[in-house]
Amino acid sequence: MAAGESDGGTVSADDAVAVLIQERLKSLRARAGLSLDKLSKLAGVSRGMLSQIELGRSVPSITVLSRIAVAFDVPVSAFLASESEVRVRVLRCGETQQLRSPDGKYGSRALFPFVGERRTEFYELRLEPGGALESAAHEKGTTENLVVSQGNMIVEIAGQQSALAAGDSIYFVADVPHSYRNRGTDSALAYLVMTYLQPVNY
Image 1 (spheres, one colour):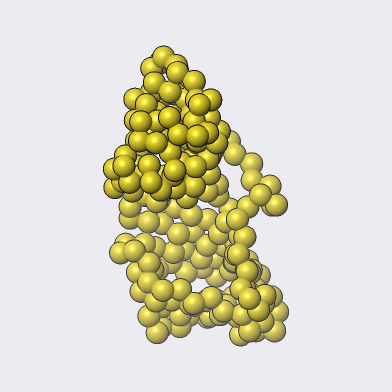
Image 2: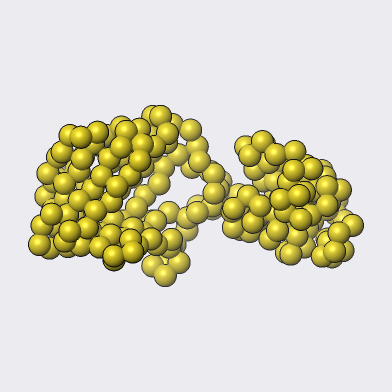
């Protein structure tokens, strides 16, 4: 057993925690197309330990679980709570994923939890005067639905421009290059829903 794994306890297969982690690990590994050997190298966790976890025979320590989570680029909580069991989730402003451009003229905030599997994402977008967001084409079948809450925006989709004011909305297939621009003198605020043809995993 590798260092840091000695505190993983052996449990019965019907143990709730073991089964939950077992199912999530198998699901994540299948989606990533990783063998146990490959995951072992990526996570720095022995193949034997990973096999025991997938069989529901061992509950990993938080250290081991953290290594596995890093290998899949997901939070540890992704292994400890089933999305079907989470009926209500409050996201405090300081807990949400936020992104800002280097010049500070563009910012986005994710209004959904980065855990589990989903087909939709919900964002708050802010554009200061002169700000712009350039986006490459997304996966085939991806759609975007944006509504402007404040200010004005120019949305360009594959070279075609649409001017939007507060209260206006736009829906389009986003598998082509597109951009959002604020050419006005006031800040612009909008809300964006992205929908994927295939589920994405966090």
